[in-house]
Length: 208
Image (cartoon, rainbow, N blue to C red; front, side, top):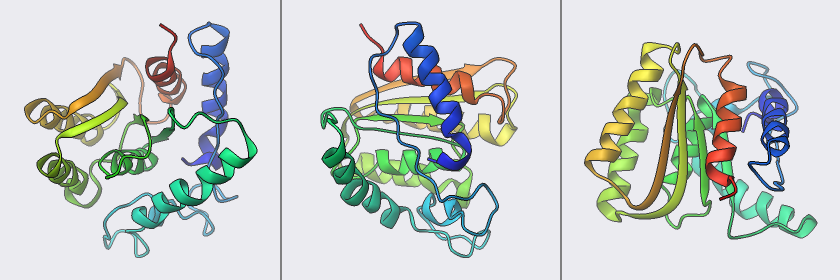
């Protein structure tokens, strides 16, 4: 997610992991709008949020955007490239990670690997935690791998909310869900990206 601003960091992280021999070939796709953060053409506030909130008048479009990713973008990628349908990943940072978590709680599950760096769990009074609880109540089986991370010097909201998610998943675990959680020392919300992406790729797709 946020391909306009974060794709270069993802590519650099992949090259670093590939150079270290920790991951094999990966097809990376940056999903963007042709416009950076806060530009009118950038619709992350609409597309990455599952619920509507007055902070963003167009918010609440995650269901439609996820449908685009799974029913339009992925089939087109499969048409163009030799992708492996057994390994489908989605990655994001901050608000992009909110969408990653939203996708994780969906049924049927489309992606197999989820990389969520500093997820914006705070959105709409932490409504994503309620969605996780609803998913667990309805079906506690979730066969996926997820990498969660945050910089230790991120805001108290970011670090504290991720701890709340960790506690919730520990108290009410999903069967089949493989979770890795990392907190990066001396990293904040902005400079954590290279380490989070590289560690996430290695954790999720690393060679045995």
